[in-house]
Image 1 (tube, rainbow, N blue to C red):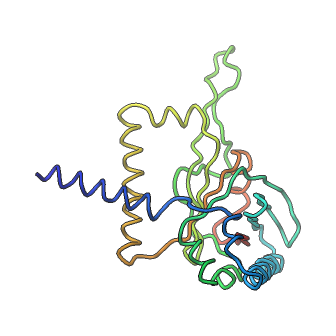
Image 2: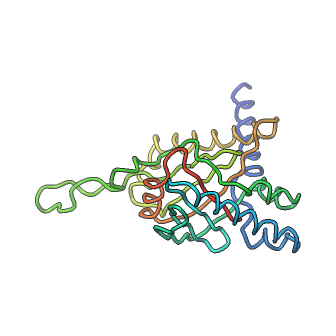
Length: 230
């Protein structure tokens, strides 16, 4: 009986996870729900956040989900442009737009608080090992690059890069199964926390190349800022 109850709890948490977390909408769909006034206020908020970033000397980023682009900027000058393959949002952000709270949320830059997950040291190569295996070197190994950037105001930006052979191997076998299971339980637990009154995070899911992701990690230190356009 205890085992059955535990299984039911896990299944329930997984169902909640699927309902409360994960990408559910895109910028195009969010745009369809805005009236002209909301559209104008959102554009002004995005501009104000960029102006605030341009007033300081640190390196920051600008994420424009409507054009699937991310810029690394310094004092308003674009240092590097990163093309994103996709950007999605969770239900909490959809609720912000639906209740006309988007502009207030985006009015000023977000501040990076911490990094989570398997994000490599930004000052190390994203690959390790000798390339020339004919001379006795080891095969190149791709380092994991899957995690999240946690900002203030409950914003979490999830980073996903194209999967590599190393990523696939990390989920094979018993250890891989347990790793995947732990990840799902953690996500379901977060969803349960939101349901029971915990902080509701605003989740952005972006797909980016490994090289661009590494550049963003190098550029954006904890305390750095981001202007966001959804």
